Image (tube, rainbow, N blue to C red):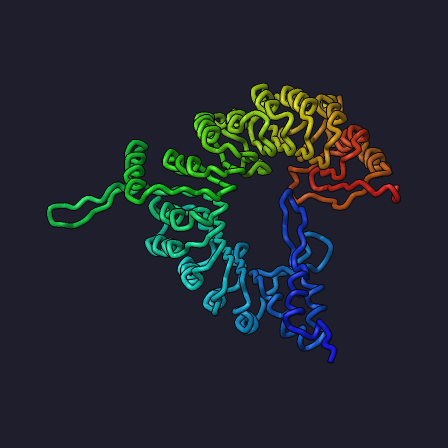
Amino acid sequence: MYTHPLSLPEIVVVVGQFISLWESEHISNEIVWQFTPKSLLAAISVNRLFYTTLTPFLWTVYAEPTIKSIGSSSFAHIYCDTALDIVERNSPHIRVLDFSCYTLPYGRNIEQLLKLNYSRLQELRVSASVNSTLVSRLISANPGLHLIEWRRTLKACTLQELDDFKSLLQLQRLRYLSLEGWNPQTTYLYKVLHHNAKHLEELHVKNCNFVIPKPAVRDDKGKISITFAKSSEEAIEAFRAMRKSYGAVRLRKIKTLHVDVEQNRFWETLNWLFVEVPALETVVFGELTKDTAKALSEILRKYCPHLRTIKHSGICKDFTRLPTQIGSAAYLVGACAPGSLVHASLDGWRISSRLTQALLEHRHSLETLELTIRDPAYQDSFRNLGIILKRLSRLKHLTVYFYVTQCDSRQPSLFLDKLALCQGLVSLSFYGFVVVAEGDHSDGGDNNEIISESVCAEPVWRELRSGSDNFQHRCCDIFRRLVFNAICPLPSLKSVVLGGEKFEKCPPSLT
């Protein structure tokens, strides 16, 4: 008797594993994953067997709040709350629980949601608005968690919050750990890393200020008292004693490390992290002083031979670096051996000659470059950017954020004229360029209509998205025209982003 393959639950399960539920989209310089269950819903409606077999796939991920689009505009959406009884009925199927976008007072009360039977979670993401005690219960109920993303507001933690943080000590299979806004004892972080050292591949410690406990002291009455380090010398001494007590931690599998060292009062006590990650390929920093950047560069150069990517977090944010942080980018580039840096996202005051020379040490390896220009005396930065573009032979992706109020219309040619030499360039992004024509201090003035027509008349480019989420990232029409004139000789270029406007090269058949 013939049995159709699709009448067997085992075959239907295999089919369900190949139905995509998520699609990626590039929004505001970030990759955003959109939930697209249309294909799976169609499969579920085939018959009863498909319904019972594939429904668990639909509930693999649950996020709160859920956003429903009601139009083409990025602002045209509403928040939808899934009924509690429906979530409860399907909670055993949920593997990924995401409350990373939950905020008060706009979100509904999720206390009852967090108390449901989530016993098979693999990933948990929560925002600072989620009660830490409820999060700790979820962690305790799911010792097999592979991913934790836990944010708090950067303030003094309550005793209850510190006690909740200890729930992480139960986990031993973490591959990804992200902590933001916490300030518990360094001892706890050290123990968590020690327990998960065999599996951990990615670690993010953002905006955290860990306190360093000094060795416990017993008084004459036998009472134990704990005090905390108040100086760098005390912190380093106490940390060494702690490491000796608990043993060394070798994080052999970590390939991505994000540490905001300057946020930590005694950043020297985090240096050991960079020594114990021999497989490190990507490192991300927040704001750094030159002295800190120089010290970290020497450590990374010595202990992380596989380092290929160096990033500054918050590179797209519009704020002015403090003078003490100017110049740190050049030191960071030096953390990689010459010819090994592949991706650099660097936020500084200017593109200095020193930074230029440091980048040119990697002219035959660098493929992705993100830079900022904040210096009002922008001419030198423009000129050095032109030198960089002229020499980088393998550059594929270029992004520049420009935070100067406005510049002369002749100055962008210092680097735009060199774009023609980047024959391998695939994507190009510029943000915040405002060009003022000679004798004119308006943003294009009466030329807007003519410039717009000249850009739209370009036969090989079509606009995919218009408008900017951040007004300060917008590029003026004059600069748009200069860019499109400069990129004509680039055969490999496929994508151009100018502020919030994205252009894509049309297929030859459409041109």
